[in-house]
Image (cartoon, rainbow, N blue to C red; front, side, top):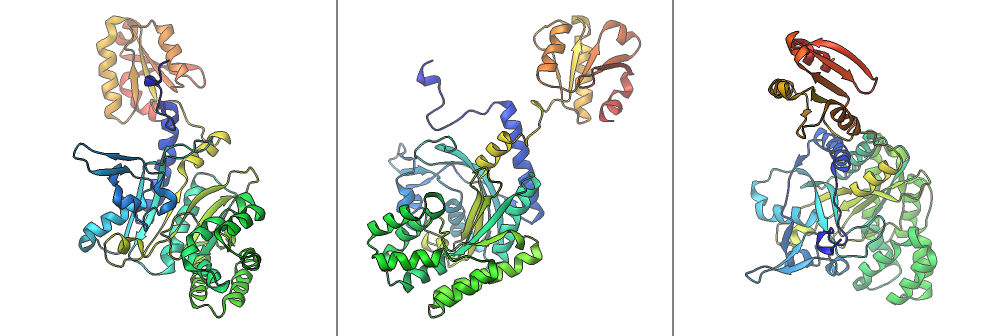
Length: 436
């Protein structure tokens, strides 16, 4: 087949069966978000390139991944690479009108031009939840709680919440006496510790220009272990003379304490190597990882970004948020057979015995739809056997059969396709029978 008829490289088509699963997951998530008082928003697929490429937005790490183009008036534009930068633009543009805290969620497509892998595409869906306007660590804890509740609502059981703070990482860099100009490069290097191991991180830190002594000291600090209380205590012992580091530890301690009230304190792991890739994080950062032993990896991640709105031209405005890895979540649920969902949302197929009863079939279909029952009728002039085969292929649970004899008696045949049982039902009782 000609490439013209293939989906562009790095993108996918989703046929009905897959879209029904995706909508099921998305609707579950929306229900959790809205239960916490978050409201939906949507933003354009493309933004001004200058905004997307700003240091506070994506930073150098993401700049090369932006889908860049010029429109017919030679304006420089780019497809959005995440849902956070557009949110910051909205707050900048409409700050006086927005009541604080501004609590929003957004579920939509984003684009990044990067290497294609089994679980990574150039067009994919993101699912973000953000709170703008609150300095309290309770806002960060609530965001994490939303992600925990969301995963549990989808029947994920084995996962942990990794916590760190960019202020702690900045404090560690101060402690080993490294220039702040190298900060983000160091963050990106140590963030690879879990995935690629000490040797890879050590090599990258050497390339950044750290000495053996600095690398040894940094690796010792970021691999401090213990429960939340012990890890924070060890961090305080190391950073007791570093103000910004102590601020970060204080904030982590507040989140841990709030998490007890929210009921997920048993899931928290303090991980001083967690850095998160984007440059705009300023405080607590968090990542939810699968712990089932199936090598699934990260399910969600986010953090506090108090400077982003100001960097992009607005007032100084605190903000925190998390992105759920909706693509990975759906992929895992498919692989683990966690999505036992029908191929169609249609509940009833109305089959006609012959052409004489077609108008009555249409009338009955309208009545069922008026009563909230999704139904379908034959549009292919198939015989009854073929109609039943079609309904069975789509896993439609009920078939209503109408023929001249049934019409005379003001009855229909109702066939349960799951139990393979058939009964005669009065037409006026059909809605009640199906709903029952």
